[in-house]
Image 1 (cartoon, rainbow, N blue to C red):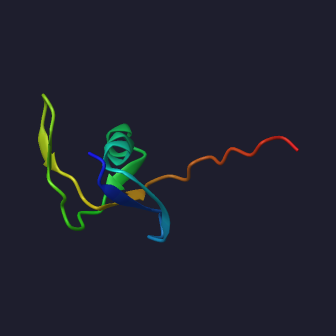
Image 2 (cartoon, helix red, strand yellow):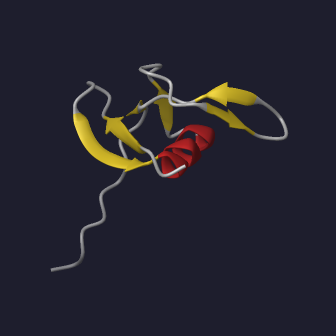
Image 3 (cartoon, rainbow, N blue to C red):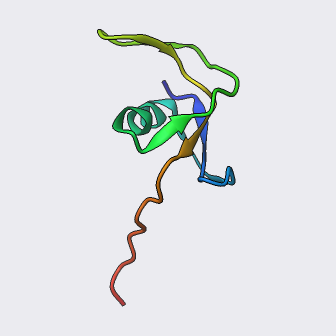
Amino acid sequence: MHAPVLVLNASYEPINVCAARRAIVLVLKGVASSTGAFPIRPVRSPVRISCFATAISASTAAPCFRPPS
């Protein structure tokens, strides 16, 4: 679950690399979708079994936190 996963923005430009565990959370929350590139291995849950990819794409723009100046 610590395999690196590439996070792409809506225009498929790379924006981040995160752990597979974090990427799964983003996909399950609906913030990102799996691109289907190079499946790593199956991810099992009580409800379903699915293959996870090495890249995901963000479906919406995430708000940026900017500390007050």
